[in-house]
Image (cartoon, rainbow, N blue to C red; front, side, top):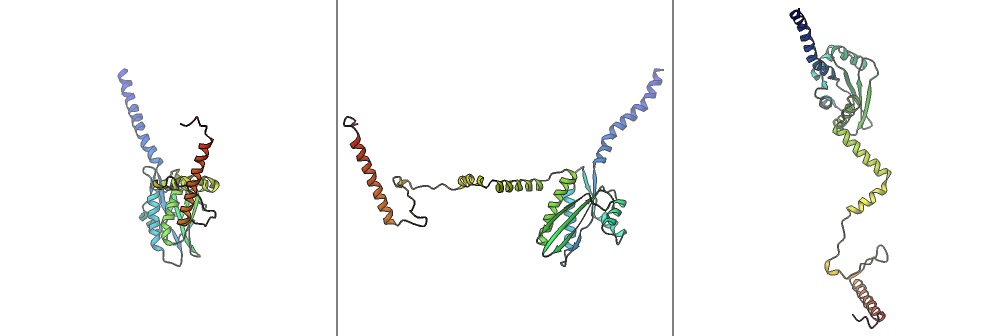
Length: 253
């Protein structure tokens, strides 16, 4: 009877043991999010097609997060787009969701207007036409576009994946300092005084008293400076004589 119960309980024990060991694996896999990046549309008279691939690479490198966020390879997305020619906008987003395991889809466009380049980026989480979040930035030259995309990627990391990057931290700290300066400009005065280099007087001029000019733009000539110094010395001698006269005779020491 005891042996029967033991043999009966072994398979059940093994089952629970295997299930317990597999739970962390399934949980870890469930937490990994997949992101698909659709190549950006470009609306410009200039040939900016070379930026399209650079934008995709920048977003892929910035959004990838070990064991948490995986970016679907660009080739996979391009192949899916080729299979459905003519699609763009929300229909293309829906098609990518249907043919991939993406949890998020990032799409966007670059539009040139009056010498300024507008960067519009959207993050989709379902097949609806309304994106989950949108992000916007501007660039004054084509060379600035990739850097702006890096900033947008940092904003996506923070807003969507609750991930703070160095770029966001640095930008926040800079903004905080600028706001503090605007709100309290008087706080700059002590700092400026501390940063100002000290004015040192030559050791051999220890007796010379510095007097400012009578007027802001007035300067002393060498003769005037010597005359002023002689007057100061004579005044010092008169003060010493007056002290001698006022002192009682019995305080000769």
